[in-house]
Length: 325
Image (tube, rainbow, N blue to C red; front, side, top):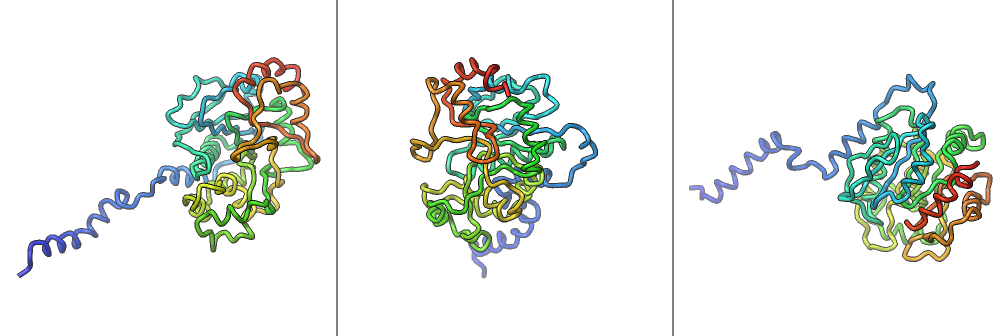
């Protein structure tokens, strides 16, 4: 005669297929199912019937604090140039976004982020997906933080990206293959093989400007994201947000990027992986002119990292220096 515990176990076993049929999402829904749905929609083909209109830059603000420099950016986003851009903001919960300081700004559904974690990759992908879906005229996608400032006017920035004969239709993303810490960072990750051999592993700044074609590659990717979304084996020196995008685009389209970023960063005197933070006494016209220059044939369009106290001196030179090209 069957015992009661056995009957109970048998009943549960026989009912499992029915439970799977009725509630598959309840049991096996991945934690980022809403993200996956967003990425699928963004990766789908979209109409380009209106691309005879002026192309736009999608400015993607990935923030974990208030947008301290919103008055400077508001001056940059002049109301007379609203046909040149769209703005999307991923604000770290529970931080309340500012009350609409920018024209054409959209706050996208956001999730918490933390440094040196895949959450920053996921946030950037959400921003890119939202911009892809919102406007087919978004042809460049510029990722920025609350610590970034513009170094030129909006018309200069737009012309530089869309009318540049030296780098036509290229993404501006730093892609480095010979960084001295690259092997240590690779070893600090869970096993990357077979998808990402060490010979394909890259590093670069997490702030970039992507073409629409590359933006769609990012939201379409599943294979590399499934590797980079895994937590690091050690807290140092694993910074997935500095590796995912350079590695993906280097593998998918090695000739489609310039290999450098247009966001200037000063690593002199850096500490704990943070670049130099400019303070108010350092702000001057000479600093702006110096930050714009590169050692090659391009110019920098943005710069970071600036302390909140820099807002007032930056506003004082905004019209006569920063936005005078």
